[in-house]
Figure (cartoon, rainbow, N blue to C red):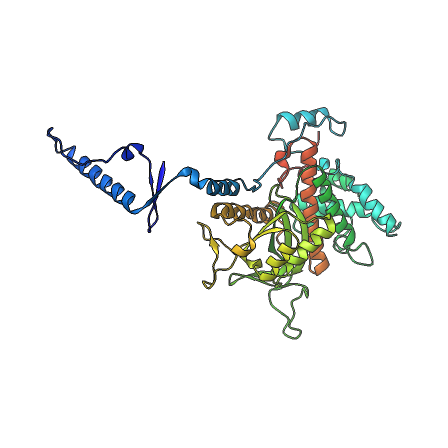
Length: 443
């Protein structure tokens, strides 16, 4: 194969016979039918074009382009993790009955029991230890582990309000036994469990990150490729401000606007998800009207504070595009692929689907590679979809900043409990399923 370079480009010749001697274009004396004449005319035109390009161009063999081919090979082999579901062995311990083991192993429609959600993680021990260390365990208070279990059950069973949870606990004794209640608490007890004079938000925050670290130790996420995104969690407040104070009923809530559309009044749920395995690894709460751009650096700093390392690669949408964010990522050694806003006044690398990136901040500028990196970010949107549609966690039953953070953390805690349980019972296909481990099956 030979490449012929011209001023306007290059031409690849694939027939080596075209270069043997000087090709003459003469008509033969044989009879030419009307069917073969157009084919011959087309061939003559092609041969004249080839000869003219040989005369005006410079011929080089492919061995002159090995360095180019080597660069292309390195670019193509650049690693972009694909979406994964880890493997796990069938459960062989004594925490499950033989019928449950067989059901998990042989019946793919079996989606587990709600009681299994608390078998493979020391849920009670962690919260009891926190109460002992912080001197919050008193006789007149309901133990934190019972309230926390009830809130996880509320999330798993898609119950929107505390009154719905109380009705379920009263009507289903097995559910009350699972939470450890002899008498069902009132809605006020559930709604005020995070008050500072009671438990506060800290035990739930620590529980979420301990569960996340447990998931990582089992290989359920790696932190090599992560994504950041925000979404609205509506507050139980009026959408109109008080005329006298100029504030919403929920003073910590804000108006959430995206792309000239008013989405509602509430809180910004800002999450970092592992894009390889689809699990949330960082949860932050902000006012609904907050700008997501400066939150990028705060999220990465908090990630490092909890886990002790920075993610290798991060993919985010153009809402977080800024010089400060790009330079911060370079400083921390993170390969950040922040989609750029195209104002038409600067050079950008564009993919086939119209996504743009700043070439000075990316290590690889191959459009196909960038397209794949950008597509992986859609896992963040699927994660929010599982929360809002699968768990029905799109609108709070109360109001306030601490209540909103608890609402988000309980969703993350339930997600990790599901993943850990699915791994231990050997059914990792249920790892990200909101419908898994939802029902109590009475034998």
